[in-house]
Image (cartoon, rainbow, N blue to C red; front, side, top):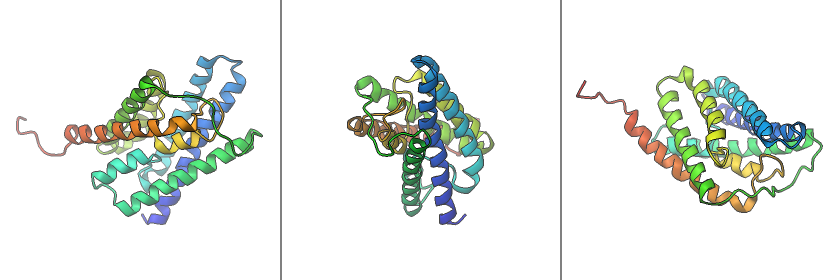
Length: 223
């Protein structure tokens, strides 16, 4: 696949994934009458569904990263070259930021805004590190070995991680930035973004390292 096609695939996938996260959060908060549990459940289902569809649709073109942490981890492992990685990350950010504007326009909200939703503290940072660690393990273990199962595995992991992590599993630097630009149910205060991204990158690095050990293609001499 040519780089322009991959770029467009990453931008479109990021657009719909980020719109799914933020838009469903707004819709869920509007319809749940203040029940945060119901709102989170609706947000989770919509996120998992759109993630499954976008991976199934676009993985044959770009690999369906939609996440700078995934792109950087695969770059370090030399599965994607640095030039393409930069294009991927730019596409993810552009697609995500356009998604924020589109969602705000659809719900008749101010296009440009910042979130006031504080998400900080050791528990939140640990949650983001663990969430991203698990995501990278899933990507490397399933997408690398059983690509036909990647869409379901990654989507189901994120659905589960929404509920077992204190941070609701952002696990994605680009979507963290995008969510800081929406003062809605799924938002994060801009001041809290750097620590989240740092935790995500640490988790991704550990996930890529452990994944490389677990899923190496060399033959086990004990077998």
